[in-house]
Length: 396
Figure 1: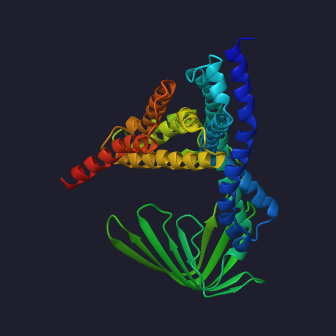
Figure 2: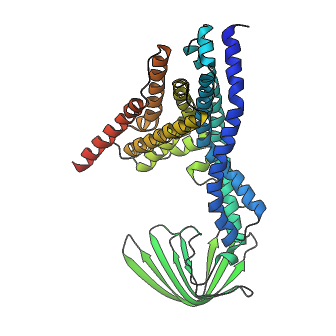
Figure 3: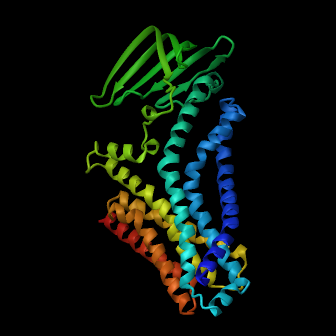
């Protein structure tokens, strides 16, 4: 077997354990942050641990979308820092293996991470978001009694605000009920009633029957107000969607790629809604491509210091990772405001990181020193100038 092929297999084999460790560690950090949010479900909704476990599982694909690129970068960085520290890179150079040849196993690992991330982004994430929403909605329906507390504004239901003064859990009776209903577009309905009672619907929904109350309906377009009194009035807080499937997908994050493109064709190309959807479409491919961009940058960073420890590689990786995504966020805001084209706002930071990685690798192949501070300034300069030009245009 040729020497280069042996070296490639060895490097890839060396990268597998750190990749699994990095992915598990970074994802667990994100999961801990998500568990703090889900703790509210246990307190307010009396959710079972099995339900919380399912919600954590459904939360993983959106996390993996970002933890995979970070793990790929840290893996490549730590692997080559270790090889440099053990003088393996010097031995490979003495054996005729150039720095450029190390690009092959690096790209193989990075492209593999990108393909996995594409599967997560294009297939797993829409299904997970739909399942997460349907599970939380069903949880809200079954635990609405535990959710309603006296003297606390309840805003968990879409476009409905609820406030009650007293609750009788056994009889499911409410006292001094205030409701603000914005479910009808262009209208705001305010309902006040001295008493109400909760009923469970056969399909799993919740109906609140109010008695001897008053209603004010404000039509925003015509600026008219209608005032009505009623003896009994029913308000349905929730219409559950019992089936997790295509018909339940109401948000673009829940749509598969084909469904999303079909949905975009119904929009006005000149509208802000179409612009945001176009950015989201580019995002579905640009975020997985970050595995390649950050992996290409990690190779020269890992080779640039033979005296660095693996811990320093983690620090460098995190710095460049956050610089990359900060640049992405800044460019995306410029794209939303129309200062730069949509494709440039999404792909510009990735191309800049790839260019910086290629430049650093070229310098390493010629045994030239790498100025990391200068490299970071060079990478951040285009973003700084874009932001400055955007501010000037806004002032004009």
